[in-house]
Length: 166
Image: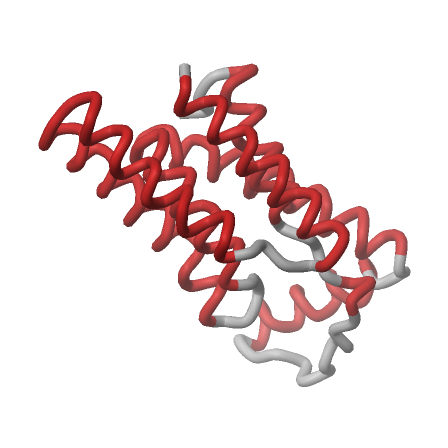
């Protein structure tokens, strides 16, 4: 199916650029959003437009709060929105669940690799017990960040390979 070919091309390009330059380009995500809207509208009329629009909005809002809080880049948000415009709300939500699991594993690996896991656990326990942060800034360096396009792409691949989680 054409939509799947375009989806996986978009994912492949996004992974490469995110790994190399730590950016997912608008030149990839915005045409992908438009393609999803047009393709689904062409295939199913107004129902297709609704399907695509709901997917776009769900994909966008799933990562909007992490973006606002500084935990993710705008390219990641637009990539998930583009995925939603192509595969719809239900499937973008399912792929997001895989993405969150995979992203969590990536985060744990980075914390372990940089000897930051113990600090993170102490800060988490302190925050839960005292309802405030230890105010010890975790120095955000490029080596501590996750190119989140990779977990997003792996989330979609997992969805296609294993089906939904819910």
